[in-house]
Image (cartoon, rainbow, N blue to C red):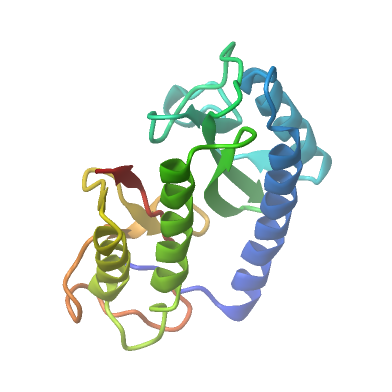
Length: 207
């Protein structure tokens, strides 16, 4: 069942989202050569807790970190640790914040200094696909419209989407219905209704 949220509940989610956004901005400023992913994890946890929140990921199915930190070809779910960032790396940082019982969940891929042209194009196309997908969050549209927006933009750029990992609904739980694949057929899938909140998560490969 897809859980619709009230305006008050969405305001609470927005408050969690504001903490999430500030945490992501803080981490992005600290991503540089010589920094370990464990150091970033420590910064994130301290900040989230200082804002009255809880790191959603920590302890979820035994996950030890407060963030997921996935360098280079590792797509998602990287465990923070001794990996030391190097110039030319990219780092996917996924943050979950629970505040007053409501979850904000989102990721960003951050370059470590200058990166090559293909990698920069990958980041740009992925962000563009997210924006196009978010524009499909209109009552009366379907979940397939979201996935199609991602897939068509990514494939037109010569990249490919990852089919085994999906976005999802989010609310009082990190993972709620429906699943949001990064591919789809327009007009297919569950209908989008007012009050639904989704974590749209484009995951894209070169080639």
